[in-house]
Amino acid sequence: MRARRCVILAALLAALLCAGMAVAETSGTGAELRLLSFDGGGHEYTVEIEDPSILACAGERDYGPGDHSLETGSTFEQVFTFTGLKPGTTAVAVWGRSPILENDDRLYTATVDAALNVTLTARRAISTFFLSRTGDIHYDSYSITREPDGYRASVNDGEPQAIDGAVVEALAQAVEEYDLARWDGFRESREFVLDGESFWLELRLTDGSHISASGDNAFPEGYFPAISAIQDILDGAGLG
Image 1 (cartoon, rainbow, N blue to C red):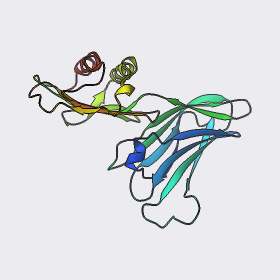
Image 2: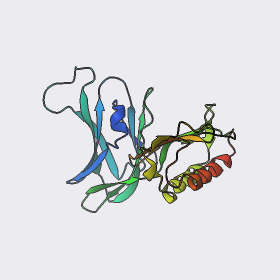
Image 3: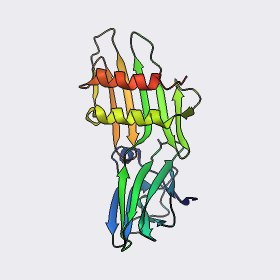
Image 4: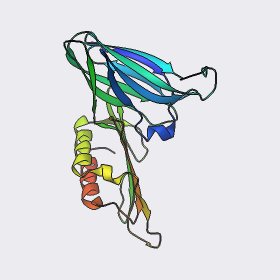
């Protein structure tokens, strides 16, 4: 069944992107998704409903008190309102694209009950992934992005190519198994070590969470078994 798309232009503050600013709230028979944004270039959002016979979507901007619509850079809340049409369950994807900001993708399961009350439940998958390592041996760097038609991967800043979704699912499982959320915010360096290893890891997940960590001869707890598992997954993906 063709998905219904609801396209809204919005721009996101980069700092707010790292904070996981989307909030899903149920009210009456509908559900709201609010994104903090500002005017002046940025993401274009597409809301895609897998089964539009179950759920409808409408969007508007909430600037708050006063008229700020003509002010460059005005902040506002982008409000998506979902209305139940019949009981059932369907997938909802929010694709955020910008020429200057990272992708901001959100995935939900929407459930509509017999009274047409709508509940949005966030689904956790990888939206963007980046890993760079340097050391005594050569490591490729990997960048992965989620697109509506599948994942794309770039090796050493090369041309993006399709990557099997099973590979990305394996990465997501490693993120959970090794609890990489604990690494978020790790920034340490042992500057007087002349050899060894450095790393930079960035992940954005479709539930709005973000993991960012880097180290130079300094590593978060559990680094080596986790990074070895991730490296094995990437090296076995047949990229490059």
